[in-house]
Amino acid sequence: PEVALLYLAASGAAALLPTPGGLGSLDAALVLALATSGAPAATAASAVLGYRMLTVWLPLPPGLLTLAVLMRRKAL
Image 1 (cartoon, rainbow, N blue to C red):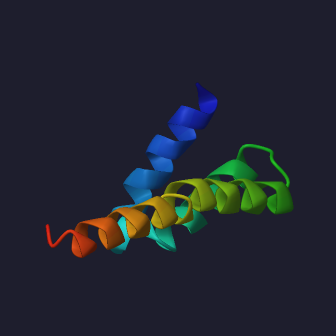
Image 2: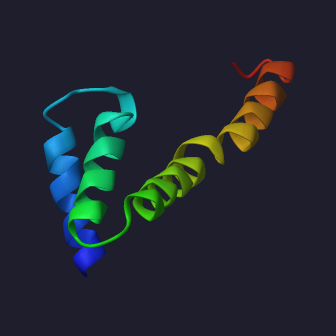
């Protein structure tokens, strides 16, 4: 529950700086929120990096594969 509240607060603060996907502003707000709640700064940064790896970079290969298949079938 505490992590969900931290994420809500961080995403609200990051919304003040409109960047695509909240890149940069959300990351900084999440690290700050986690560090303020007692997590070591290195651990907080690692957790946010892991979060970004899962939410931004992991979906890219399947998406690129799907795009390639659709382009080959001339569906796009």
